[in-house]
Structure formats: structure tokens, C-alpha cells
Length: 360
Image 1: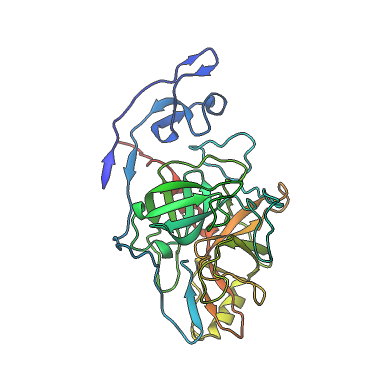
Image 2: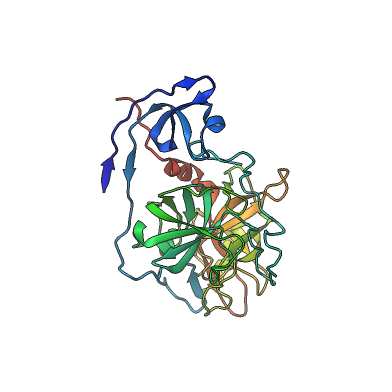
């Protein structure tokens, strides 16, 4: 449904040094530089408001069915995993560093086991729920925008999805840093998403209210197309299954992966039932874990992130989104990930809270 809000025209009146017209960013056409000094974290000092056009993008309702479903199965099972930028329109608090981790965690009373993350270690990781059931992972890229895979959101409507940030143990309500919840206003899926190949497998969740950024809830920036990560070791954090057939993990897990060169990845995948003519879609990159340590079903939609070299210590940028992989009990194959850098312009454009209008 499309609707338009009323048009409000006003001028930001400065009395002395103070701003008297602090409004939410989506209502402001011209933002005054005094915003961060005089307005709250999620407001701006507005010189000229404008009409905001809101849209709801949703799939066909699937009733109570929150299962993303399965794709084609082969003898080697193809597993479809249910599956420093800041947004100028949503100012962050002073001292907030995009992609900054908490390497020692934030709760020393919790003993993390092998393969588990520490509480608050990766504060941009979010969990998606469909009608109260865990659905997929995602990443907070702006206070009001979550990046995830399109796979799990097929046939879903915004009112079916809920986002938790600051989550660590899905089974516990008693944690030092309690998760926060936001409802979803819009689902924006990439128009070229191909369910059968995983091509263009990405989607944005536009939240009704932004998260307030703090020590255990932060955003992560996106890699740019100019960077190469081949040969780098990177990380995925998600609630993937502990074994092939088990339920998702309750504790947020982390997995280190090596980025695999595209041609090598394609050759390895051609040795599976995909066949020797298989062509890796241009929108996918590959990463590979160690035997017994790799992403699993339940990690779908989660971020693949790499440390920022030469920057602030313990900061990361998102390189990929967990997409699909091939399981064979005796042999490892690279998993595929949506190449975030390739879609950076699309992500930025669709994260904005309004539509630009040029000319008449």
C-alpha cells in the first residue's frame, strides 16, 4: 500500500546557539550542521522539511509457515541456508565506531566454549524471527536498516518479522545485556534474486524504529568494490546448527573462513553434482572453513566480515552474506556468499528514508 504523509514546511530557527526544530531525519529536506550538537541521537536540526513517501514491499503471505523451504537436492546435498560508513540521515552518538567489536566480550561471567562467540563480541549481529520462531541471521548496517539474505524472506510480510539486536543466547531471558526488539516496516528484496542459484540473494529490512546504538548494539560498514579479500581469513557469526540435522544453536557461534579465489571455487564446485559446466554467478564469492568448522544451516543471512587493515584495531567490514553450500560427509567444498561490495550502491540507495525527486 502506498501513502504519503502531509507536507510540512518550516524553517529551523536558531535562538542564540540552540536549534529549535529537531525532527526525525526522514522529515527533513535540508539538515543543519548543528544537528549533532543540539539534537538527540536520532533527530536532526531541520532547515526545510519535505514530503516523505513510504512504501511497503512484501511477499505473498504464507500464513503460519515460517520455513524458508528447500531447493534442489543432489547426492551431495546442496544446503540453502535460510540463508567506516554512517547513514547521514540517522546520526550516531559521539564515540560510536562503525564495525567496532568487543574482542573480550562484555560479560566475563559467561564461559564461551569452542566455536562460540563471547557476549557482545560482534554487536552488529542480529537475529530474525518469524512469528516468534528463529528464522535467520542478519547485520545492522544502519540503526534502522538490517541487511540479510532474500532466501528466508520469500512469501513473508513485514508484520511477520521481528528483529533482535544485542542477542547472544536465544534460550535465555536473563543476560547482563538484554536484547532489544524492533518491528519491520518494509522488506526490500533485490529484484534479480534467483532462488535456484542464489544469485542476488540479499534483502533489506527497514525498521519501524531505529535501534539506539550502544556498547553491545553497533552497526557495521560495507566493503567497497575496489578491495580484494582473496586469501584473507574472515569470520561469520550466527546461530547455525551444531550438526547437520540438529536445531539451530542457542548460543551465537563464530567460524573463521578463508576467502577462496573465484576460479578455484568454481572448479571445486564442478566436481560435485553441479557438473563440469557449472558457472558460479557473478554476484557470489566463496569462503572455506576447516574440517568440522564451517557455516551451517541457520547461519543463512548472517554477515561474512573481515578485519579492516590499517584502521582502528578490532574493527570489521562486511564482505558477504551467507548464501548456500554443499554438504558431503567426506569432503569439504567452499560455501558461497553474496558479494556485498557488488551491491553497495543498491544497498545505500534503498536504505535512504525517502525518494529523491529531480526536476518537476
